[in-house]
Length: 413
Image 1 (cartoon, one colour):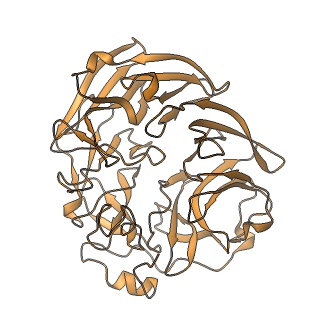
Image 2 (spheres, one colour):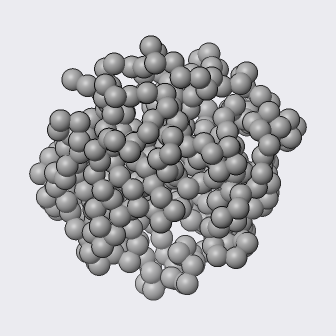
């Protein structure tokens, strides 16, 4: 599949919109073997054109340029969607494309192995899940009831009960609670609510152009309220690619309302529920048209009153250019830092991404890590960004090993 050509990183940065400013000098790309961390294991998901791939664990064999061909791995039919919680790896679905549910993995002797599975075989959509701790987890399973949230124990990978939100039904032909958002703050569960119709597109067509978040009090086991925001739709993209983020400094919750990806109306927005609040912040809204249009916000990570997302260098549509998603997946997505107070966007000095990896950035030991796959530059790797100093450098790149579909870090004990 041919990608939009960017002659070089410098050329792309020169062509940036005036709204953006360059953050740093050119990122370091030379291998720095003496700078590799010794006290952590890198968890790498690679992938092929058909989305299959493997999970790799790199300890003492880490390098700045990684060839995975001689490294043992766990084979996957679909290689996206991994999450690390308390140094344990969880992932949606199993090793085969027919294994629908939630997987848990253990790391032994430098290699991952299956360590538990919860099946949700009748899900029409991917299984959303949240792991809070070794004993507390939640997931959404349409076959168990669209307006019910299932509880499970991540330690044993066994279902332990459910949260019934069927009182929120309005009789719509399609209803779901927690299909796209399951977030926990201050012992309250924040859950997206959908009322609408299923169409041939993967997005649900809502009855009204508004989004809803139910806040469930886990202490008193009751629905506290339902927060609504007008002129916004579709609180997420895919379940293996969550579009909400809790700023661990401010404890504010940020949520992407993607909008209708066929019409792109309402437009894509980023919304906020502030710490201690149970309604949307009416004084805050980031609209994609303030930066580029038509296009979408399709990543999010919040940290210390900054939002990290990708913004396309040109107008684009997920359903444009023939088969859906094809024209969308070109080297056009620039990692960007947005100040939530000023709304100023600063393009980070990284190669543009083509949206084959859905993973959001994450914070580890003061640095934020970003994934980029760029066909023009034959790059598949991760960048390390220090939000305090503004320094950007290449953490590693894959060599002859497919796309980088996911990257996580486990602290060695």
